Length: 310
Ligand SMILES: NC(=O)c1ccc[n+]([C@@H]2O[C@H](COP(=O)([O-])OP(=O)(O)OC[C@H]3O[C@@H](n4cnc5c(N)ncnc54)[C@H](OP(=O)(O)O)[C@@H]3O)[C@@H](O)[C@H]2O)c1
Image (tube, rainbow, N blue to C red):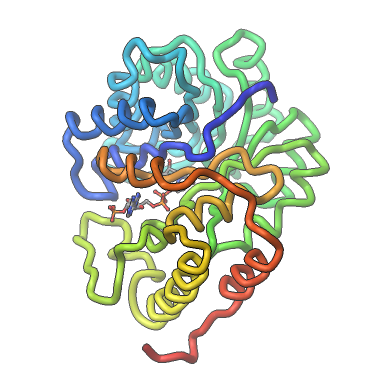
């Protein structure tokens, strides 16, 4: 892949005004432009985020700076007018959806175009052929998928080259990476690590007294309440100790951990305002973590700590 992505990618689900509370258009535009100023050059969204709203605001924010950045978006999760969601990766649907995404993003090509989910009602051949056509006619540059099982990924890989996948990967969630790294290496597929701060848990500000509004996805995420939450907070404390020893913030440890792995293209982080962008960028830069630190982080991630009461 002839592309040099920044180590941090900007996740634009946060600006969709659907599952992360409200962010004004002005704040979203300022955040995105601050990110470009601070060297972030890849922006990830989806046509389903806010039913197109996130793509629209991203396109508006970038304006004339399109040639400074790479755009990543997704297709296949369909938001119906009553708010319910379905999956459609048929050729006919993809051909319509790409043109809507291009229009909302104010661009004539998308750098990273991925299937948002596997569609059990469409033949993979049909989907693969649609993506190949889009690539041939220059509407997309690189093809990817997310929320696919390994088997379905391999099936699709036999039909078209999968340039990249998106998986959840952070210092608390390592299972998906462990599951897919071998096939990614064998197939020459790169990884965009989403939720690199574990939905904010690795941002350094969330503690046992933090509460989330019912408009925030974390109010229904089992990692943010009950026993599991206690276990995660304990892990965060241990990770904090490692970060302190290295004289870096927990955020920087988390970003460096993700980027120290092979095949990782970028660590995607959702940011809600320019301050978060600056905090994530101005910290010390990327450096490879050594084996000892790696081992410590893996031990923490792999231990469930459920028996420990806080
Ligand atoms: N392919 C997929 O299915 C898929 C799934 C999930 C996500 N994604 C992509 O990945 C992106 C990121 O993942 P994510 O949104 O799940 O989680 P994330 O990036 O791990 O966490 C986002 C949260 O981190 C917090 N944060 C960011 N910077 C911070 C800072 N400097 N200090 C403290 N907290 C900070 C913010 O929390 P507060 O809101 O509390 O301020 C923000 O909402 C998404 O935007 C989306 O583009 C893709």
